[in-house]
Length: 148
Image 1 (cartoon, rainbow, N blue to C red):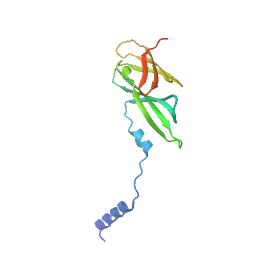
Image 2: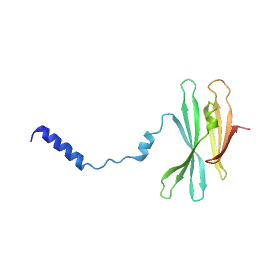
Image 3: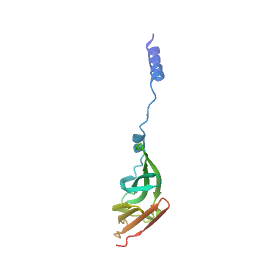
Image 4: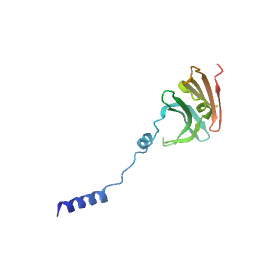
């Protein structure tokens, strides 16, 4: 058998008898996270009817000299077998419209929903502010300047 024929036969054998490549869903998902996603934290827990899970707070940042942030809240549900799925994802568009960065934030949850207290940095001037976000459901929230 010539070397060329042996090479072709070997490649054909490897192709025919190699098992399917199994993708690692977690690793593939993490590899697909956009570079702009800069911070992810668990903000508290939620329960609704027969589902329960955690609030995930996601911050994405963009810009060079003047960095601005976008703020997202996700509802991550846990199945009985421990599998996690994102039930809902919500962007706080009023925050994005401010064109500021997040310096720090704290959160807590209770039976009414999620409360997030946000300290911002204004990249355009030194007009740093504090904001509060109250999330009651994926379609109902209140966002504004902190009152305390």
